[in-house]
Length: 523
Image (cartoon, rainbow, N blue to C red; front, side):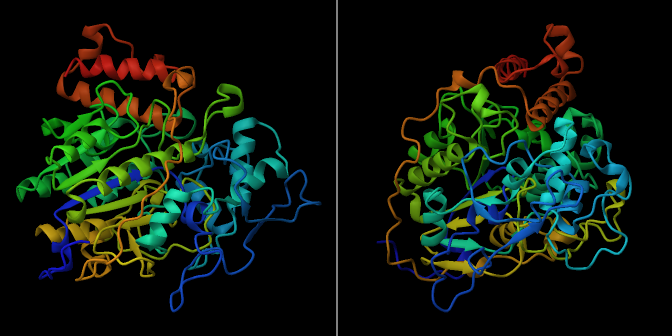
């Protein structure tokens, strides 16, 4: 039982905010079937339980005559979809509006041309019927051949609760948001920038884009994003403690926000990359030294547990590989269980979410949005006036009642808005100024039921050496580029003087880990 004392604001019910942000999964992909057996009485849930959901097969598909549509089905394994779906703005336009410009058929996202698959007569409410079309186009660009139903139908596969018992239990026992959208209809770096800054500075793509192409270099990102005031700056002004718990000191969050320039003691890395749960977070939780704001990164490099769709063929590279989605379940379980067993539990808000949908199917159309800066036009002419696709959002707190379902529209800027209300700093951009906060999720009285005890979904963990020879994904390449830029920004030409390899020479996961470790010693 928890303290029943009422407070003046629902946000006063917790002293610590812990955010675990995973990678590239849509709401339907992971939680669409959450209430397949029945939505709680008196509540609504925008999931997949209300009937058949499908996408049409484009006429150019090699087997279009025998397969006119693809229905949503249960996910076949924890690796799907493989290969990795498209996630840049041209791909998302196809996914939302089912349109591919003739010049962009069979072309990778980095090489697509204007108007980037955005139809001239695009409806205000996207029909969400182009995921199959885009996945076929993505596969044909990657594999240089036409693909059949068995390959492209993966994009419509979604996980059932029995496949994701940890996420499902937390969503049903605490709060799930069924209209939480990522902030940009595009990639990881941009959406993670919005989480902490309320803008991506007009950027619409990762510094290292699809296929490893150098679409926008790190100096562009530096100029457009690093100088913007972010949550870390706002917290420091209010004397609010914060830490980033990451795989290495060169965290993705550091590269996106440039926080390493003044982040001594704020970026806590795993000393030997051997822990499922970030070592620093576990240590601080155990020793009652948890900061007021904790941002947990999953492993992005070694045996990545970020739930990102596979970019390599697991059947070839590792028979013992359990799959990134299951490894993510394990990470969620570890974070939740550590908090559940902590004396700080009743003063912690745990947020579990994903940065963007990563090309995975979702059936709810993203709504219009307020641009971060009035009249702003960013890369490729995008005006930042539309949200990205829905992503999972689960919140865990002793002041959240079981079975809470939040139907109002939120996006990543809603987090900034709510934290500004809690800690008393002003808005960072027009986007977070106008965002819907989530203060109403927390009840004045603590819940009468205990936090449920969950079962470890991967009790034996992972053997990290199984992944040493895996080739690097585009996201991993972008992390290396960001790390090098962070280091060179502090010490120009340090890599050359130290005789270290540079990103272009790194080919495998093990090489990447060794490179990051070597660079960390130069800080």
